[in-house]
Length: 219
Ligand SMILES: [Zn+2]
Image (cartoon, rainbow, N blue to C red; front, side):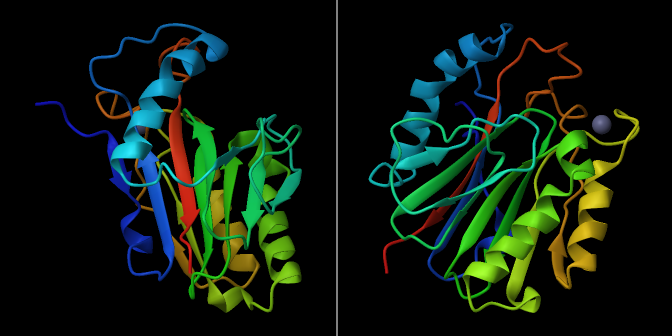
């Protein structure tokens, strides 16, 4: 039997009203192609997995992801990926945010009471630009929340020694500097686990993408 490639983000399992997942490498699907072709192969697989997870009724809102620092505040379904942004913030329920990664880090930033959340695509460049602190700042600005009300979780990404820069460690420092106390990083390296994850660097750019999701369930 095939391993189910969807993991629940365990740290966030106790957070009311939200579901956070990470879809890893799809077993039995060979992907040695560039991004657009890989995305076309993966779309029906991701759709099927979200369906099996009971998340099919919630529109999936994604970002263009250009390794920048722009952020979108999502208030409803969109017909295509939101252009020019690498982070999505929402307080809208019955919606799933999605970020694609293969070595860059997916970062979940979630209100402890489940009232709001964000998903960020943060690699070397986005981390240098400070996208995570920018998202924290914006999330606090649009809600009544305090930095201590937030939980930050860093997902699987490439790390030393497979990569020369420890951007995940930098993200932890940045979140701490914003006053967030609840920071979780299981320190999983994508390149070290080719059976579970796609790695852009170790597969020389010809690989798939993982899908990180954050759903605010209907209240
Ligand atoms: Zn590694």
